[in-house]
Image (cartoon, rainbow, N blue to C red):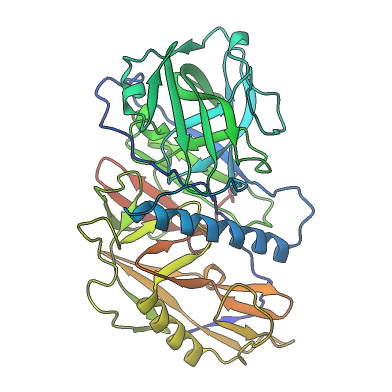
Length: 435
């Protein structure tokens, strides 16, 4: 089976946040959340490079660099023998959440990350703060701020905390960036929905996040410190548009996240006891050009020591497959693509082709991901991308001992995380069409 390409001015969803927590797991579950009823709201997302003067090829290269950092960080986290002590890199992310903090509310943007838990923003007075577009939040100017005591369960859920004039936190990320400060409780406003008593980090010593256009981070992981956990959301979803689209990507929390229209398929979410923040999926096989590759059973299995498995991640740009599986995909894709191989300078991928001036007769093999109970057929633009003028590549790479389902492959799907039923759904749609 092949999909005809009539145009290869393809669009990219570039979503890679190179800021994986060194210890992203939160301790224990909270039984007395601040919010006792479920809150529902929608938040607009924007690309971190939105409005900047970059070509689509420059955007891609920037995203690939961040993706490589994130992959290295996740690999280091899963390697129990690693001692992560890397130099501080720019903690740039792709998707920024627009929200406000305090009473009266002060607007700011923060990175959305399904691979971490803590919510935090920069706070005055700063010992070390990076530049941000909006004024730095000062809790003394808010009537709804309070400092969390050391006895609070959110404080006890931190991976690292000390008790000195309240709950002090230190949160490190796999790329070397970090935030330190004290824990507070505050009203956060999402679009027009105020949500009181959100526990967050008031960061006074922050490094490695400059250049992201954000003022902090909103963790969307499985732990008790994350936004879905704190608002008791039984589900959330996001719908990511392409980077050059004028439409807006969205994040929906609670009942608003129910998919509408399309053909929805659902697969179980798998939890890794060693890294419980992350969301894992079971992948059985991959079809290229309509034919299953017959990838050996267990290739994508999550091992008892926490290695292996396949993570679905909002922050990794492209799909990374364990080396043996990627080799099978690459071989099949090469043999079924009627284009000459690209042999020029490196463009960040190793399965690339020369694009003819007339693309009307170009045939590209289809790709279907066979998850547990869910066959997801990827649109061509989700895996076959133009990386430089006249050069197109398979937007996948090989990785050792781990696999990640990346953001380009998720574009123009509504991705629903059903936390109550421990399931994830894919609904094909045109993201942003109703924004």
